[in-house]
Image (tube, rainbow over all chains, first blue to last red; front, side, top):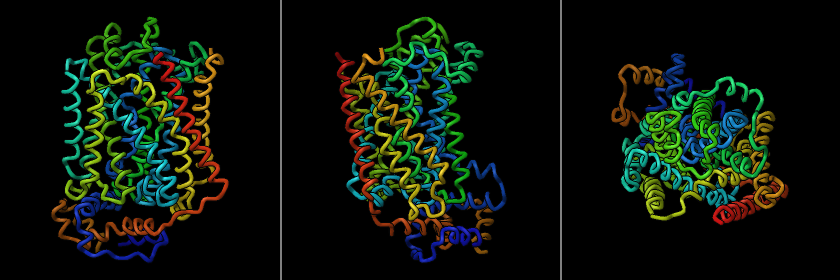
Length: 459
Length: 80
């Protein structure tokens, strides 16, 4: 009881109501209690590695989930159009910024036990909440469509028809929910997400000049073509491949659903840092893997996933290309899972309906209904013959960046809210870093707008 | 102390979900902090937005709308 009392004292909350036994023994509570028992036991016995193992999940999932099909295509386009140079350290920098933003969601989720959408509605009201939700659901749906584009393209490399790939993808994603526990779902998707690292051996197969790779990290160069409209589009696309609104909503909701407490925040930070590192390495590997296309002057500006895999055959072999296609397929599957979950969490939080992966289907029909519904509609769109999917892929990362400044503003306002965070609100240093990310993302958006409205400035 | 004993018991016997359902007090103790925080959040009301904050939020909203128009222009340019 000592541990629990200490947690209560830190919060300074004494006037809570004790729930009835009947309430406390529902499936959601029991599942969460089972997970928390193991965490408390590991902490009590100072088993730090098992403790970390128990608490990792949301951070790695969100970071590897954001290495989704359009993101990997963006990195592939970067490598094929700019080679090894400026964009390698730039991508690393974007992941540092992603860590700064996502770390805040860990604290918000662990302390409030509420999802991001729920907190926005509660503190800013329905008017502003609706704007945030429109941004989220609109970009989530478009991104989900592109995940299925990735699934279809990856499977297409192996000769799988489009409709079979879509149906198979939905089947794999929904089977992860059949465990009816957050913990089992998280571990299944984590195992799948690890396939994102498949791009690392592909990069090795491309026999890169490792000296040039190291040089680029120290000098942020070369940047072939300088700062023209194409560079700005790729720049924005790579930022959108790393920092997006759905990540904020997903990680905070997942942290709350997992039941992390304020004592788990350090492990939550480690989880996020490990995720950022793994995702950055996979992203950089993708740029390196496709750099031979730049060296051999191949025009890859209009390439989709399947074309990238085909074009890489002379440089990484058929096996390497197959791994690349498999990586795109996996990226689509994992991201489709996390993004659809993010939409369902947000919907449940805003409607104040059950929204937990620890609940049975019967207990949370709207939550699982939204999950399945968005998957079916997005998959269905991809199966429509002649639908202009390439344009959706083109703009999805860009849109994600452009909707990010208000999302970061809500994030910073919430984490500085004394009533929500109490003594755990942001320090001036964390605020400076957070504002820095917001300014950087906003300026990148403005630069993109200038390049579109006044193209002559960037020729 | 009961909870600590129960924790040790949980590890020793590898308690499973169905067994835990029969121990409502243990579930209640373990989720005490979780429930307190949930209740604390439910009590929160809408915060008052100052003029400066409203200006920033409207500014960011116009930024998004403007950028969506820019993206539409860019896509249109790409198609043609």
